[in-house]
Length: 455
Image 1 (cartoon, rainbow, N blue to C red):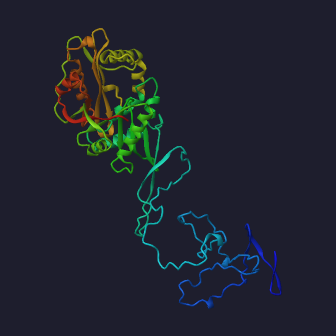
Image 2 (image 1 turned 180 degrees about the vertical axis):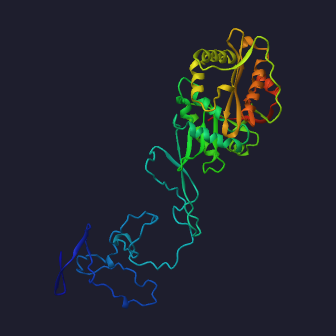
Image 3 (image 1 turned 30 degrees about the vertical axis):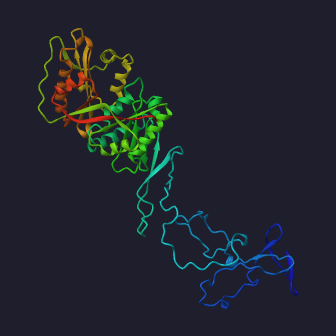
């Protein structure tokens, strides 16, 4: 565009066309105010100015000064609130457009405000190759900024996701084994309970109901820091490492929501003796204690009587054959009044579960060769922990002391294999509690049922 000013003709570059005006981009020499004309003690000295240049009083064409190319794009895109780490603000004297600022300059800001930087504590995802887009970032370990000028602490991203079987079986097993010695007795699943929920079935895995109620929280190093586990139904089983950035209440809340989505009208949470944090969460979320309870008994290095086997019965380990697997299934159905146990369950558990040991998977065999009672001792080798699960007697063979005999034999075998602690857990069933009370166990922990309703 050519413009006449005085007696000279010269060209201007058009910046943009507004409704009633043409906005020109200024050349460096066009009416640029010299710095020497500004008083030295003026606090606004050297700052850019927005002027209206009277090229034509009738048209009042506005010209925005672009001193030192301050409107040029910077090398990197800036965040709307602040520059991110390692992003450079190239031009410190950036000029706003004429229609975006007032007609006067603000006084210079001589120092930074003593308030926290915007979004300083925002959780920042640290993406890596192979990240799953369906995972959720739910927490951080450490802080992104110390707030006092000290070096930033390392940040660890926490993601939650569904359990994948068989890939996560070992991850969860090791997690539970790590938690067990540092948690109140009865508050953490022993690994037999976990592996039983996965392997005591026709094929390894979690059914749709348990999968929908289960969740893992994992940090960027692949460490499992929290888990919501399920055996189906309304019971919630939260597990959290003591130093995890994921709170126990977060896991409980997730499990409640999963249960509500499945149609549950209430939730059940077991609070063990001495688990103060679990009780605090239960009270805070509106749970109420009920009459339900579970008892965990433990046997530590104490003498164990030798078992006495009733006439007509012999003790032996289970056999690795389909006939024995089927006989175990029939015994479980008869002893617990069920119909769903089948041979493939025991076979699959024996084949896949690391806690299974044939030498301590015991039956009392009747004269006809059928199993009359069953008592399994499973293992957490890293904790030198032996777990009785299950223990039962066929109704036709009760009153012969077979369950007690099997448990005493299991205790002797467990001690011979190096067990330091032997545990057994049960609910409020009178026959089971009478049996365990007759053995050299100590009742060490009671877990009481708390209920939340309505959901």
